[in-house]
Amino acid sequence: MVERVVATEEAIQLINKLKTIHGPLMFHQSGGCCDGSSPMCYQEGELKIGANDVLLGHIGGSPFYIAADQYAYWKHTQLIIDVVNGRGGMFSLEGPEGKRFLTRSRVFTEDERKELQL
Image (cartoon, rainbow, N blue to C red; front, side, top):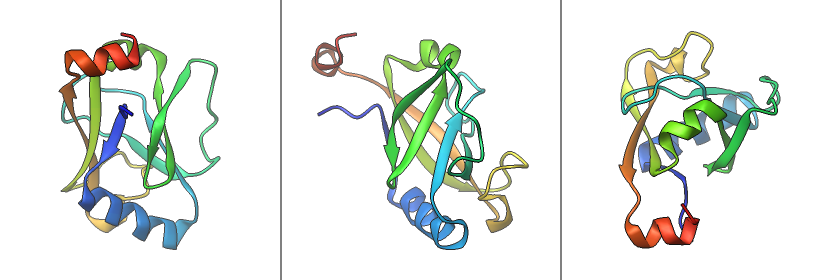
């Protein structure tokens, strides 16, 4: 089964650490149309999910949503959530750790596109 969003091992480790501190988490990619943008990490339920948000999948057991307009840009790619040193969005939970989540992507193969019916 093709996953629309995946996370690197380093991202999973940070997610697990943040879950220990904050409890269940959720992610939202609302801005940035390109590699290098940062999804926001919140305590689950802290951000109200709207009718224009798309559940892309789960990373580290946490739901990952994307704004519908962003989904239109990214729907032909698999999002790969990584971690780098630095500060992300000021309300994202990983900030105090001196890290930020980072979105990378790769274009789905033709077989994957068929499976996803794109």
